[in-house]
Length: 88
Figure 1 (cartoon, rainbow, N blue to C red):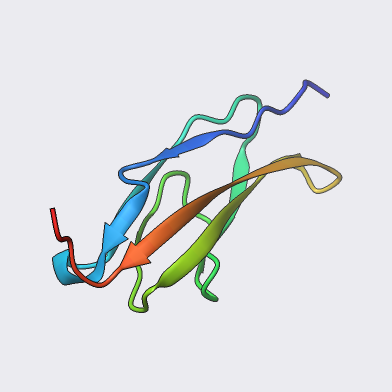
Figure 2: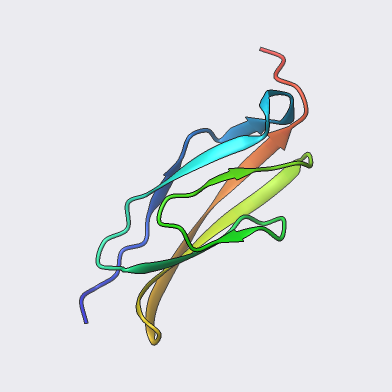
């Protein structure tokens, strides 16, 4: 099999619940064809590049498992912070 390179970016590193708590994920993985996302709060997705809405303040680790087949996968993760109010 080809080397899997799981990678993704987020629309923001800090999400504000006062602005809806939404984050958009862009999947840039290489040599994978199925994906499992875990958003760190019990939410999951199998979409290629999902959007997700957080409802609680906290620090969450978003995990992406990228698969070529059932026995060939790699994963990566990123921490995202959810604050209540944007005070900029």
